[in-house]
Image 1 (cartoon, one colour):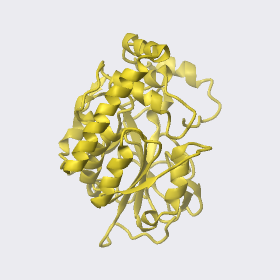
Image 2 (cartoon, rainbow, N blue to C red):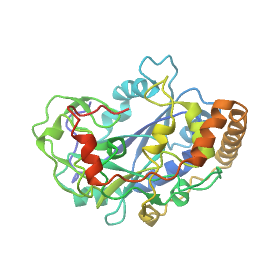
Image 3 (cartoon, rainbow, N blue to C red):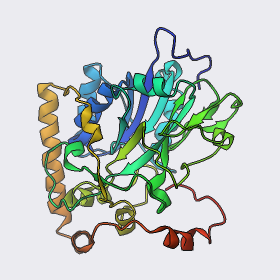
Image 4 (cartoon, rainbow, N blue to C red):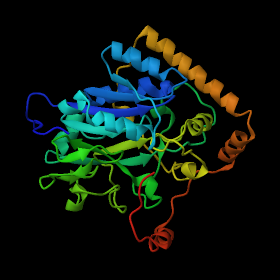
Length: 349
């Protein structure tokens, strides 16, 4: 990774978002428009095994100069996302980026300070070299049918601002200064620390994290609000019909792993309304060819759901989604019953 990155006071500071996608064309334009408005300069996007035309949309976006698209063909011994990150480490965009964030398409950076842009985030945390963006889980809220509507406007109810369990709902993604302190990219944080004595990590409420975060740490302390300045809105579920298609797609970082009811229950919170992301009004990405490809991706998603519902296992999963109520946050005494048995910090999925 790059050394000698300019500080924020220099003339040009470039932010890079790295993304891997498969069959996500129906959501791509909203995600891209939002993160362009947030202030990301470059998008390095890897696609693999797309049947819905996501790869064709990315080709068109590349022609328009909005993204850099790489087809990430398998096989994937460790999953397509890990294969993509290894390629990203060597890419020219990585070498010229000052700040880097590895994302998924169901994650939206939500800056609650100032004008809701990356410049406002850095102004709020001028000493940070890494900012731990805590997930805030936005649940399904009982939405059954998939509609071609903005995710950020459809799903507005989320987990409590302080959540103690499950740990999978409290993971971070890391916006970090690309100054050579870490040799490798990771899904949740940069890896292989090399020169980290100067590193200063902050949480999403602007509090400095312990020095241990320089080399490890996948979630910030449970018993406080970590979202006051910035949070990562995580729309992991979507409509029930769309979730069935997501399960069929599989996991980005585990090629053979599927989604199931445990994934759903760990994320289906609806305790607090949070519309703060709507304070940012992104300009849409407008292009006739992209509009055509987007409509085709929407049609594919609906058609794929109908195809899957011809098979009993998918019918059973859909039925369980319909039967399962929203997830109830556990009170502290019940969380304590779980945590007293923990001997090591878990690894993320």
